[in-house]
Amino acid sequence: MFSMNPSITQSNPPANAPHIPVAIIGAGACGLVAAISLRDLGMDCVLLERDAQPSGSTALSSGFIPAAGTAVQRAAGVVDSAELFAQDIQAKAHGTAAAHLVAAFSQRIGAVMDVLAARHALEFIVLDGFLYPGHSVRRMHAVPQKTGAALVAQLERAAVSAGADIVTQATVRQIFVDSAQWVTGVGYQRPDGTMEHLRCDALILACNGFGGNPQMVRELLPEMCDALFAGHTGNDGSAISWGRALGARLADLGGYQGHGSWAVPQGALISWALMMEGGIQLNARGERFHDETQGYSEAAVHVLAQPGGVAWNVFDGPILELAPSFPDFCAAEEAGALKTCADAQALAALIDCDAANVIAACASNTRTIGSGEASTGSAQADGRPHGQTSKRPLQAPFYAVKVTGALFHTQGGLDIDAQCRVLRDDGTPFPNLLAAGGAARGVSGNTVWGYLSGNGLLSAVAGGAIAAESAFTMVTQIVTIGPP
Figure 1 (tube, helix red, strand yellow):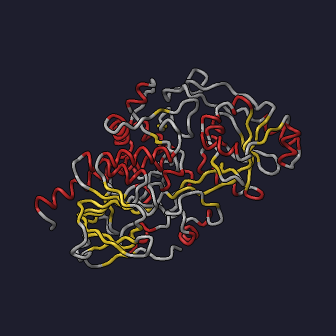
Figure 2 (cartoon, helix red, strand yellow):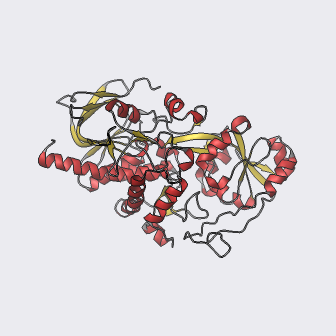
Figure 3 (spheres, helix red, strand yellow):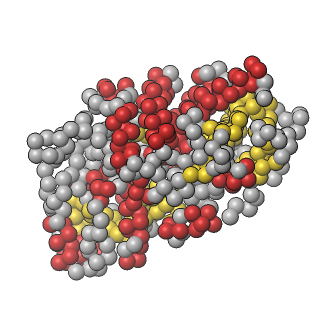
């Protein structure tokens, strides 16, 4: 558990504390987009970030944002729509994702990405060469560096340029509320232990999930209690603790993003694009054990269920050609994660298994593999999606990386409406409390397999913008007519 629990204080912050219209807890993608959006609306805000510089789960991710109908997509010849995106989200979640959030996020994300590009000079590309699991078309957007850290850096630059204030090394410990459950301010702790305070008219929780809190993981995600946590340590469950203390409704707490491709012992992400292009996973017996095209999130559970909780990602030369375009893979290769095997016997020796199993597994890889040229969800005459290549087994030489399953971030949290207002147990919204990103429920339903690639950053970026717009409306009403 974290050493100092976050608390709800039933009083007002000190009268001499500085005042700001909107306070934002957390300066990952969600908080930074919220700040940028507020400044675009002409409203002042302060981001409170626990780290020495903005990072969060976003900086540890690949930084890929799924969005539909963007200018970048159109320039790349990709035909997409919010409706198709929403269908893909619900198809992956088997219809269990929160319908109001699926609609809100899929409709909003395209315009947010266009504004970030056109008004704030963020440069986005649409990833090509493959389709991520569950997506009908190419809609994964990334900054050219293809890292989450680079995405955060660009968002931070845009937020500062827009006039947002960022206070780092400020860990929020208190939320002040009055008798009517209006948030009146926050208290945050400095590295030397001193507490500082801030008064606000609206509060956006853009802070964290609970994957870094072992007690909450044991309670809410028991199947991952022994899994490696590859997320940010700031995911300590503060938002849930505040919500429970306030009487907020929680939702989809069984939803999370796992990843079945975390290199061991190097501790690096191996892109699932290699699986989507025809790579396979073998267990310690040299056997395939799941359908790799279903998604990297549920693959974490499948891998952890194998002997020793490990597997081997196996691919061949044509697939390896895609790998250098991913910085995480390059880092893992430099650290010695990539092994080269001249033939099936050498691969079996590496895994320490029966060569007959490896030969059978590589020959069995006759599923359809993807090509990034797909620009529609329609099918060819043979039933394969447009732009996909024919089936083929893997060919020697083989390349392999030893991996395990990991927990990246949670997808459940505070229940919110389509305006990102936090809801009480009775379903009514708190008057001036908003949440998005890791603090709130996402669009993955209540389980691991509901996670569509990129859902985390979809909720963060679209949710951050929506929360900002709602906060602007709340504060404007307060200034105009005052609180009830």
